[in-house]
Image (cartoon, rainbow, N blue to C red; front, side, top):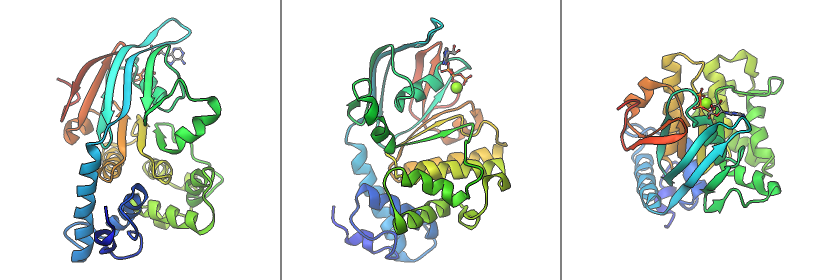
Length: 287
Ligand SMILES: Nc1ncnc2c1ncn2[C@@H]1O[C@H](COP(=O)(O)OP(=O)(O)OP(=O)(O)O)[C@@H](O)[C@H]1O
Ligand SMILES: [Mg+2]
């Protein structure tokens, strides 16, 4: 894919070829030029990006689970013979009652847990075959957001986000630029120098999302990201994840947020007692 159409944007963040990195960079720029506003060239670039994402979606499964079971020490089957395919670019809700295995499924995807039986393949790699020392490389391409936000309280918002980048080897001006792009994306650029305890729960969760997105992940995993938030703030958090998804990041979210699942109409995978009992496109929380 050639770059001229991308360069038609405002010329800063969108410069370069329509590679995965450029898509992410444009995503910050897009928030500055929302479709329908901004200059004509900017909108054109946004449309161009949608085309490139559609092409990417045809590629392959990003996630493939084959006959996956997970038995914890207690002898409980948290997951039982799960088969699941998630393609690049999908947005998937994982729902089900408490204890159904949702968190276990998410943990298998970033190798926090390993399956007792079966195969978990992410980005073409069988996660039970990768060496322990290679796990950090896998996680560079995965952003994770939890209910329990876990920000460093004695570091500024900007430093919290920058930290996630520095551990992957970014340095200097690159870090500052990307941190500021991603904080603009989540609407917190003006809080960059503040500290997490000065932020509301919803704002802290937005920082956590910025931290997960700053590495430009192929995959965003979230486990109850809106667990402690009011309905309006939860909706904002899911909108941010939807925006990341629009620009190519595959999103898998475990949630009990019924209203949000019902309103967003994405793919819904329902677990019960460790088994997939429903998997529908444009689904709802219940049947
Ligand atoms: N570390 C663990 N050790 C032993 N059993 C565990 C462990 N983690 C989870 N389990 C058990 O595995 C089952 C699935 O748990 P999991 O946390 O995946 O459920 P969940 O769907 O995320 O539930 P919730 O909606 O309450 O978060 C439960 O019976 C749970 O008690
Ligand atoms: Mg859970």
